Image 1 (spheres, helix red, strand yellow):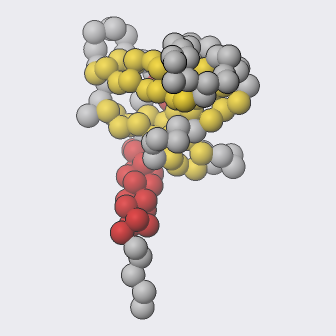
Image 2 (image 1 turned 90 degrees about the horizontal axis):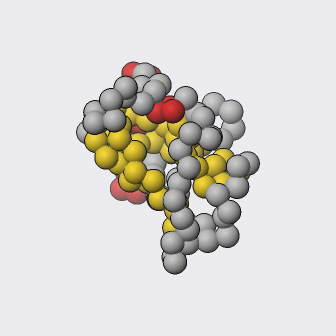
Length: 122
């Protein structure tokens, strides 16, 4: 009997946690009050992008509702969101057409052959 390496156990734990969030149901919209929730900063690096936005379960996957600011000198695009505690799935939309998972976040199968990034707000 072989044992999984710590790296694979860690990856399995992250995927399992994300799956539990999905099965428990993720919030589908932003809070009504801009003062509700916690500030969460997302960033994405692509110095060649002309535009970057973020869409996810927090904004009904609307690619036009949350444009990111950038790029800075390092090619990084950023946005700060106010979200209530919970689990969210999201992707970055580059140049209005390419949907990209966040390389710095855990991901979960989107059910359509791709991957959504997972964000947990405490």
